[in-house]
Image (cartoon, rainbow, N blue to C red; front, side):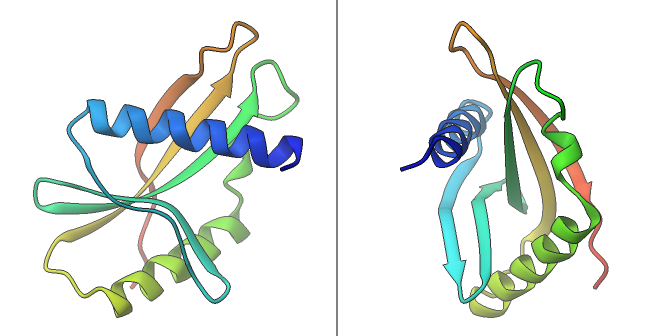
Length: 121
């Protein structure tokens, strides 16, 4: 596993832990179907949350939020649609972002941004 993959896996674990602490039930992690991929699918209340996780080293040139480009948002929407086609649900879908900063002391800083991507279906 390369450095980028290790950073990503560390961020996804921090995001998963944060979600669990906040009362989310993790439904799937690293779901893939063809070219589509979702980092985390979670449920809380009457909503199903599709969570994109972006991780960067703290103090880097770009923030995790900046990595959620328009192209990534389009890809994320398509992945959510693919999930819902395979897993029909009456729950309200929501597309969220968790931004993780890896700090020098090894303690990740997690920021949850609900409704980070607006659905267009």
